[in-house]
Amino acid sequence: MKEPIHSKENVYRNLWRTGLPIFAELLLVSLFQMVDAAMLKPCGTISIAAVGLTAEPVNLLEFAFFALQTAVIARAAGLYAKRDWPAVHRLLAAVLKLVLSAVLVLSLIFAVFAGPILRLFGADAQTLPIAVSYLRITLLAFAMRRIYGAVTAVLKGVDAPRWSFVLNLIANAVNLVFDYLLINGVGPFPRMGAVGAAVATVLGCVVGLVLSFVVCARYFHAQNAPMSAAVWREPARETIDRICREAAPMVSEKVMIRLGIFISIQRIALLGATAFATYRILITLQQFSMLGSEAISTTVLIFVSQAYANRDPDEARRYTHGGLCLAAAFASVCALLFFVLPAPLMTLYSDDPAVITRGAYVLRFIAFYQPCQAVALVYAGAMRGCGLAKIPSMVTTIGIVLIRPVLVYLLTPSLGVLGAWLAISADEIFRMIVLLTRRGRLYRACAQTT
Image 1 (spheres, rainbow, N blue to C red):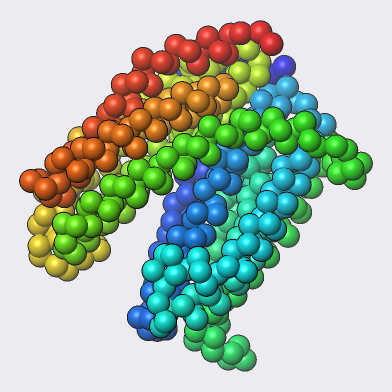
Image 2: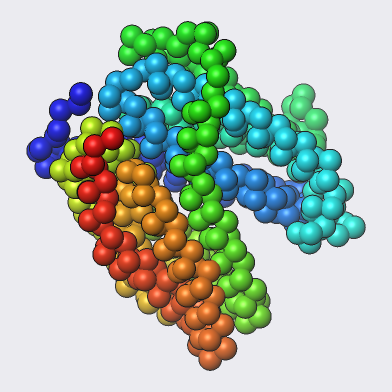
């Protein structure tokens, strides 16, 4: 059994060691997505719009898998705390069977009905042909990305998060190289335009998929726990059922988040193009602040899952408190930047004086609730690590589906974009307060015997 780590320095060292590659991975993926989109510029407005239309269907497909990965990380971390390698092997085999079945079915449905699906998201006669071709090719990348995402989720849970960062770094680098070669037709490569970007994504995911299995096999071998072929033949229904039950609250939370955002955006869009552009830029800036808190939240989830497996509430408390300090510090630095440099930050995304002036004013307000958002994310991660995922799921549902949309509809007519962010801040502060009042339950959960 893993010995409790009582030193505060060791707690922060472990949080930093595990959390840094997770943060780097999130930041890397975000930056690569921005560069990937920018490389479509030579393809023209219609191609750019067509590719943009495919993002929502793919996001719709992926949100449930993100929730599943969180459940897998928590389960793998608990098994790793006990060094139960046979159970880790069974978990990996079961998750891969589940993911492979799900992505094949979903990819087939979306490929067959690509045209009607894209029309629902706004495709017209000009964008539809490009969008259909792009989506069908991208579905191959989606399937491979979700399979190697399942492998990297297990690696994060067994104290090897750096490999997830390395794999994503390599896969995205391959993607960008072939973006340049295939979009523009450099050298012997054909000029494929926007479709070339989809092919490049597939090639990057092929590399990521192959390397994920190589890395996973080598990691198990290094731990003197090689994975036998027999594990793939074992029944996996019990493990799959358990993972699905644990992931269900997080899947429903993702659904509610998308619903709440959709309801709010419908009202914000009525404010006009300038106001909506301001809102979207502010969302992009705030997402950077969330990257750090989300990485720390996932890191806390890993260590609390280990404490939960070992029935050690003191260790759960130490890592939760350490995560709170780190997340609050990161969020406070971002808040300071938002407050001191709002106009320069807005000019990174727009040259419109109206957008910059309005956005800078609101960004100073956004700065004040960043630490609240960080605290809520860390407590949510800790609760998911000890089998209490229903609590953050219910709190998020109330905040983002009820509180936020109601306030958006009440405040935006008179306050514009500021009203929208008042609504968002009320939602974030509500979540923080409720999770703070429920924090005792996660420590009691870690103290209970099975």
